Length: 96
Image 1: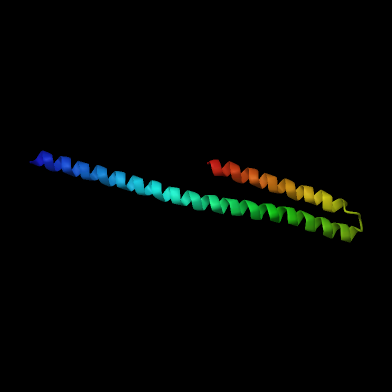
Image 2: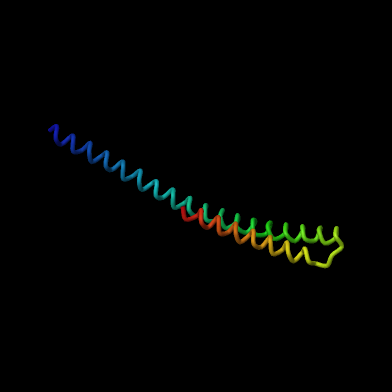
């Protein structure tokens, strides 16, 4: 009688462990969709901010120095480069 009770307790413990594992996987799956959406919005915003900031700095420098759009081109390239580097860094962190 005692063996049957021990087996039942072991079965119950194993069932509880499996149930917790399944719930954990379901939660991770739900969180991964939310995490992916957050990542996509973060990438878009950061790309736009980097490029716009480069253009604004270029315009301000060109107005201040009275030059042709040299600084607009230079800082637009810098902003685009910064955006690409940020995307690379975020993608590298995503794999971890």
